[in-house]
Image 1: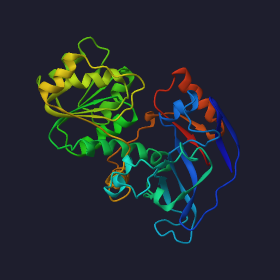
Image 2: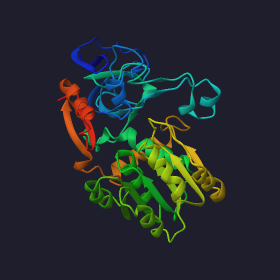
Image 3: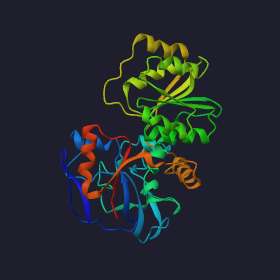
Image 4: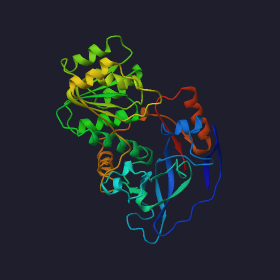
Amino acid sequence: MKASVLVSDRKLEYKDIDSDEVKENDVRIDVKYTGICGSDVPRVLKHGAHFYPIVLGHEFSGEVTEVGNEVTSVKPGDHVVGIPLMPCFECEDCKKGNFSLCKHYSFVGSRRNGSYAEEIVLPENNVFKISNDIPFDKAVFFEPITVAYHAILQSKFEPNKTVAILGDGTIGLFALQILKCLGASKVVMFGRKEEKKNRALALGADAWICTTDEDFMKQAMAATDGKGFDYLYEAAGNTQTMLYMFELAANKSTACLIGTPTSNLELTPRLWENLNRKEFYLTGSWMSYSNPWPGVEWQEANKLLKNGDIQIPSDMVDKVFDLEDAMDAFDLFDKGEVKGKVLLRCKK
C-alpha cells in the first residue's frame, strides 16, 4: 500500500510499505480522509517524532474492508473512525475509567503507525462504527469533536451559564456548538483574526471579541454585566489566552485548559491573586475518553453529527491535499499560511 512516511525531520516520502496482517481481533480499514492535527506539525517540522520512519495521523475516517474472525462490532462495508488511544486497560487509572491517564499506553500515529496511508489495521477496540449518513470528509472531524466534548465533561458544565471560549479554531468551534446544545445561556468566542468572526457567529456564538482590540477586556466584562464568565475554555494552546482566563473568570467559576502551550506560562502575583480571591476552579483536559470505553464523548459525537447539531461548514477546511502531496501541506504550516483545518485525501 502507499503511505506518506516521515523518514526524518521535515521529510515525508510517499512510498510503498507493507500492509499489516489482520489477526483475529483486528480490522482493516480503507482510509478515506485523515486530518493534520496540530500535534503532527512539530512531529514533522521540529524533530518531534518518537522514532523514524513512522506513518503519522490519528484523526481519520474510512470503510471496513476486512475483519478478524473474533470481531463482532463491525463488518466489511461499515463506516468507521479511528480511536487513537491504546490504553493498557490493566493499570489503576484504566480500571477507574481514566483511560487518558494510562501510563502504559500506545497511540496511533505517534507511537505506532497511523493514518497517513491508504489503509490501516487496528484492534477492534480502536475502531468506532459511525452512521453511514455522515460523509467521510465530515467524519474525519470526529476525534476533535470528542476532545471538545471531554473538556466540557471535565469542567462539569451546567446549563444556563455564561461561557467564554478562548480560541476560535477547530476545537473551539466544536466546543461552541456542543455548549449551545447543552443549554449555555451565552457563549462568547475570543479570537485574533477578524475573518473568523462571521464563522463563529454563524455557528451560534452570541458574540465574538477580538483580543487585539485595546478595549477587548472591557467588551468581555460588559457581556456578563461585569461579573465574568461562569465557564471558560482555552482551546488555542496560547500562553497569553491562558492568562486572560484569570481576568475573565467569575467568582466560583470553572476554567478548563484544552490547548497545550509551547512556551512557559508565567503568572504575576496579581493574576495569582485572582485565582485566590475569585476561588475559581482551574482544571486541564487531556484527550477524550471515559468509561465505558471509549466513552460518552464518542457516542454523543456520533449523535450530534448524524442529527446535524454539529455543523462543519466548508470554510472550516482550509485545504485538502492528496496523500502523495502531504509534504506540501506541512510547507503551508511552516510558512504560517494555514487558516483552517488541513485534510489529506487518502483513498480516491
